[in-house]
Structure formats: C-alpha cells, structure tokens
Image 1 (cartoon, rainbow, N blue to C red):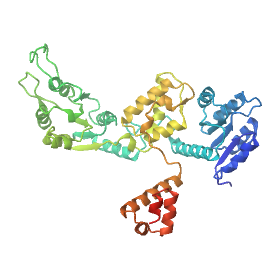
Image 2: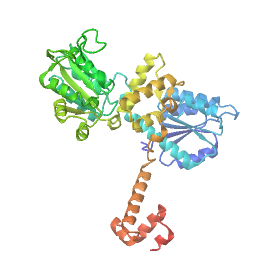
Image 3: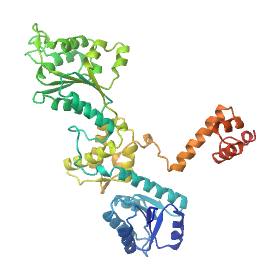
Length: 455
C-alpha cells in the first residue's frame, strides 16, 4: 500500500509533468485530459488536484478546464483544486474560485512555490477533517442555545446543571459576547422556577437616575411623572429568576439597597412605606473583574460576596478548541433558512481563518460575521471577502514542521549569544554543541556578522 498521499496532476505538457517530480512527499498521478482526470479521481480519491486551465487546444478558451473543475467539485467537494494557468485575467480567476477552486497559480512555474501551495492545501484538508464530525447541523446542545464540543465549556455546562436546582445566587463572569445570558436562562429553565418569569435588566444600559425605579418600582406621585403605581423588575421576577446583567456597572449609590434586598428579600418601592417580600432567584453577570473594582472602591466587597455564592467563569471563544468552526456551520444553516438563501459551504481558507481568528467579540462577533457572509455570498461557497474579517489580526501559521524547528533553533541561538555577550565558546557550551557546529548554524540562519563569526 502506498503510504504517501495522492496528488493528481492534470496536465498535457511534458515539461510540466517533469516538474511534478519535485513533489517528493506525494504519490503523483498524471492525467493527460479531463476524461482521464475524472477516472483517476474516482479511483484514487486524491485530496489535492493540480489542474492546468489551459488544457484545451485553443489557449483563449478555458471552458474545458473549468468544466473539469466543476465535475471535480461536484464529485469530491472537499478536494482542493489548484488551478495552474497562464491567464492573468481577474475575471477568469474570480470565476474559478466561485466554482470551488482552492487557489490559482499563474505560470511560469516555480517548483518550490507550487510545492508550498500543495503542502498548504494538504494542511487545510487535514484541518477540515478534524472538524468533519461537526458537519451535521443537528448538533447536540448540552444547554439550549449553546453549541459546544469544548471540554472547557462542557465543564461550565455541567456546573450550570448542578447548581440550577438550588436557589443559590450565581455570578457569571466572562468577556462580552461569551453567552452569559444563555447560561442565565439555562439556570432558570432547569430550576424549579422554570414556570415563573425570567426578568433581565442591563445595569449598564439604564441611566443612574432611572435605574433605581426600574429595579424597585415606584408609587403614584413618588416623583414628577409618576402618574400610577409601577412594579420594578425585582417585583416582576417574583417566583422566578432575576438576571442582573453587567452588575459591575451598578452605581455605588444603589449597591447598599441591592445588598439589603439580597439579605432580607424585602423591597420598598420609591415613595412607598411598606416593605414587600419577594421570592426570587438572583443571577448576575459581568465582564469586569469585581475584585479590581473593589480595590478601586467602586464596588462593595460585602455585595460581591452576596452575589458570588457560586462564580462560573465562561471561557472566551478563542479558548474553546474547535467551537468557532462548529458554530459557524450551525449559524450558516440557521441564517440560510432565515434569509431563504441556499445553504453555503465554507471555503478551506474561511475555515482556516475562523479557526485561527482571535474573536475579540466572541460568539456575538462570530454570529454577526456569519450572518453577513450568508447574505453577501454569491457562489456556492462563503469566501473570506464575504466574512470580511480584519486580516491584519490573523497570526501566520508556520508552513511546516521544518519551519517551526528552524524558528525555535534560531531563537535559542540568538538568546544564548546575547546571554553570553557574543562569546561563541560559552554560547556553544550552553547550547550543548561544538563551536564549529554553532558557527554552521549561525551561518545557516544568518546570525551575526563576519567579525562576530571570527571570535
């Protein structure tokens, strides 16, 4: 059995076929025309195909190559097709990508550059296969509205399920957009209060002079404009759950009154004189580190301990391994139905980008990007342009293991030389190599100058 991955090269130019010998890591299969290419595609199922777009007798016509591309994508939608062409027309390139091409390589051929492109295609293919288990849109949700396979989030879900049945006060801590309200609703829906109301209030969204009346309510005539008795959010949540979002932004002047309510479960409406008993479970959320606010004297320590009987920390999306790509698939399906658009597939570049992007806005940012992409996509695939992510924020993935080793080796040598104040003998001793070996490595990585090398 062949241990090398298959690489199908569709090309009738003997010169180009000779170049294919440079693909030492792959078992290269040559096809001279479209018919032979499809036959070998069915037989060998290569993960990457190099397709010459100029295979027709008329170099101005590319339809034969494009038709071959269509058939390959139709038969094997996950196969990465690299188109090689002498045509620099943007129109042809855009059409080819819209039909499902992985990438375009413009002649003349540089064997090293083309090999790098093939290696990259195989890397992307491997990445896609890691997430293939998530291609089924009927993904199991450990908590309603929360899609995850991350061990970190699975742990959070188990904690939510354990504490949901109690009346203990919960503090949800996490960055903006991580799904704090989804978990708050889960705490309510899995509790004995599920049939009662779930009342949410954002402490950062309401002006300080209105927040007290929103929370505690007011009697008729309590202030100008109070023309009738109005119940506050706390009272409306009776027999249910009160969700105080962004509790870290609660004005300091209101914190003693909220603390008293948490201790006694009694409130007084503005303008009222009689205490009112309220049976409510309190769940809070914040993106702030409340201990830092306590140190800054903007949050009461005693209130913090009342609110955080149990604290649940929600990891950001960038730390949930595999979740971003899985959520993207689910969201594509959701918004394709909502906007009555055909369900799209993500290109390999998009999947890789989603996997690597830091998602500072977390799940909320991902949802907005996918919604936009579903609306903007014109071809069968969602492209990077449809996703519209800031490319400058994306880290560069090392091309291969050799590059990683070289980078680490170069960094270690530079560190040792700097530590030894450019004394090569001492640096070699620290690194555990001989002086000649270190000289060779310094020359290989272009470290230092001739004067330094002569020391």
